[in-house]
Structures are given as C-alpha cells and as structure tokens.
Amino acid sequence: RSERMIVSILAVLKCVAAYVPVSPGYPSERISYVLSDTGARVVLCDSDYVRLFERLCDSSTGIVPVGDPVFEADLLSGYPSTNPVTEVGSGNLAYVIYTSGTTGKPKGVMVEHKGLVNIVNDQIAFTGLDSYINGSSLAYSNYVFDAHVMDIYPSLLTGNKIYVVPEL
Image (cartoon, rainbow, N blue to C red; front, side, top):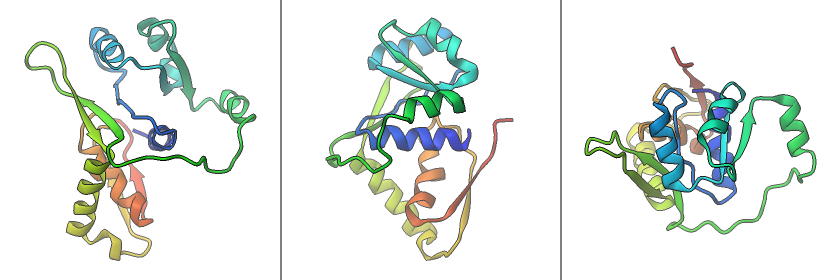
C-alpha cells in the first residue's frame, strides 16, 4: 500500500487497460499462475521486487519498476504531459481480482467499468462523501481485495484526500 500503488492503478486505467493486483508476498506458484492466466504483458512493481517478477514472468512481459526516479524520468521523458484521448466504455474491463482458490486454482473475477462505477457511486451516496469539502478518508485495505475499491475511488471521485496506511 502506497501512493505509488494508487498512481499505478490510475495509470493502467488511463491506458485503457485493466489491472490485476498481485502481492509480492504471494507464493511464487500463485504469482506465476496469475501472470500466466491473465497473459500479463506489463508488470508494474516496486523497484524492490524487480528481480522476483523477472524470475516469475514470461520473457516477453515488461517489468516496470515504480518508484525509481531515474528510471521513471527516463521512461516518461519522451511522452507528452497532456491527457491521452481514449474511448473507455462501461463494458471495458477495469480490473481482475483473483479469489483465494478454495477449489485448487485461484479464479479471476473480472470487474468492468460499469460495475466499478456503480459500487463507487453507491458508496459515495451511502457515506455522503460528496458533501464534504476537503474531506479525507483512510485507505487501509490490501489492494489485492475488492475492498480497496471502497478505500480509494470514492475519495478520488469526490476530490477528497486519501491517507494511505502503510503495510505493517
């Protein structure tokens, strides 16, 4: 959990792609399975975990270390700073969360943008977060669980602050 994780998630969505949160604390077999099952072409990871993902990913998967300022500056230098023009529809995939795998192999649950928007709008209405000016919320759920949606998106969409609780 970090602000870099939130920025990375938003970057993936901005690219009209879907994100698949994977914990580097997962057993190697689970990480390999999820990456293989999704056909991940790019893995964004904390620079501390580059070697782990290089070992577990297919050779065609790009590994992008997030949080390495030199790498990020070099990577981003050739791109415009303006927002890309994209066409994201409600049926586009937003993210995939893998279940605990009680039947043997974890299964990916695919969440489209319409499902994400519906749950976030319900959460905003339930909490009244949109009526707060300069409000703040706490992001404490692990990003590999659906609960992360309630922690980050309602605050982002209402212009409020998010305080991210670091991993303990």
